[in-house]
Image (tube, rainbow, N blue to C red; front, side, top):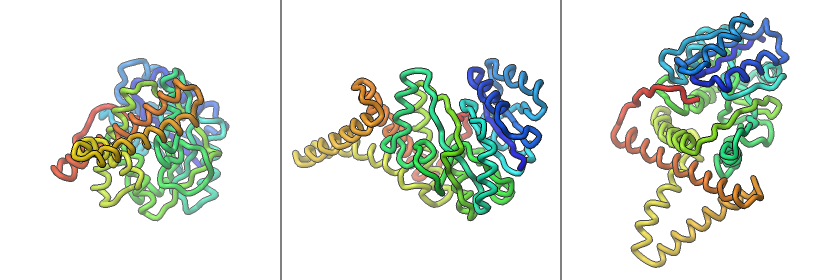
Length: 335
């Protein structure tokens, strides 16, 4: 099976070389592999690093992504490719040696699957990154985002870094270039709606260098929540129940605060609700680290995830549902 790998990239000079080297070191027959790195006009040395690989390996290709957005980069690479399946990968990721072999094996094993994928092993370069990774690998932090929480094999609604059969793109089209975030969720929803299955297995593994910025994490999850509303409107359906929980949490915090001034009973219920949330946050954080300082930081990161996503979702409801606003294209890769 010939495999095509598409990697969106912008200003990733610190990581894109590691990413591509892991691909070079993989055990898959390189005559059956092609790579397209779609660079969004990087202002650092990413292009130099990429072209160092393209000069050495004729199956690695550099493509300039003048639009700079992630879905445009994905579609650019897919259009250039001619593999039997297309794999999406982030520039912050590294593949294990058997990554391509395992993807091909499971695509051949499950003919009903339009996509297969695996688990992400987080790599931390700072304590902040470790805290963020711990929160994002907890069911309390991200719900049942299975690709972040190693458990077992099975059919799921979405995966990260999926391997998609060529026929899937021919049947349902490419990634929605309007979306700044959630383009993976949107595409995978369309995959399952078209009658294909998505299979997740711990045998397919990637390493991922976790970004170490709470500010970027907040912005990222606010965008996730915001664009999820657009997807709900686009598909006239909830893509998953877990998306509503952060919005309900934000609603409880804000509305509950106002209602608590009405009566002592409501105030007591409000306080109990807050205590229950933070109690659970500490409990799940403790499962990730028994060190008190880290436990508190992980619990605080849970709050950042839920509050940012919930606020983004509320803004999305206001813009897309109530105001009927159309999406505005944003510049900059988000992967």
